[in-house]
Image 1: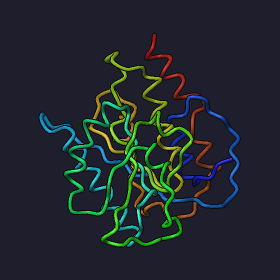
Image 2: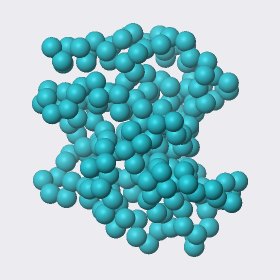
Image 3: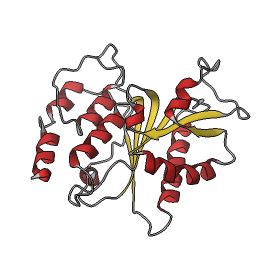
Image 4: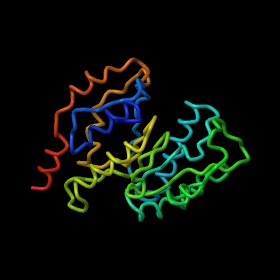
Length: 231
């Protein structure tokens, strides 16, 4: 049973190793099309470039939902703790002058806020946005999720293809409404196919046929690719 939208489920299915055919929805929400932001990795300032793209993503969210209070509604999911520590400084610098404060998942879960029913932001009040590794997000869900730096080359041998696929899938399924995939361009990565995907010009607003879209997926395609890369 899924609490997230149908578009989130379809996006996650591209990276689902255990492709289950039966998905039950307690709602009829198609949701919003997932967004991808792929960029060439600069020779220097890699994490500053990631911070810039995250800021662009946040601006896009606030453009789509003017006045939305992002406090505990936005999560930035990264591959591991090392990546988080390297990103934290540049991201804080980029968010300087805003009311957004990156916190880890543990600290966010300790906070019980009287603002939980608030839908709109107040400029002078700090809003915690969660920045943490995909492992530390287990069991948590957020209205909007940015998956950042999760892809990696499947041919270098530096990281398991199964692990990379798993962390992208887990990041997508942390989102209830909307997901952004932000990544440097990786040769022979899981996201290579996105270069050949046509942009949905309607912004994901037309009526979705979940069954028709589901029928286009090749069962166990992700698992077969992982097995091939590991041979």
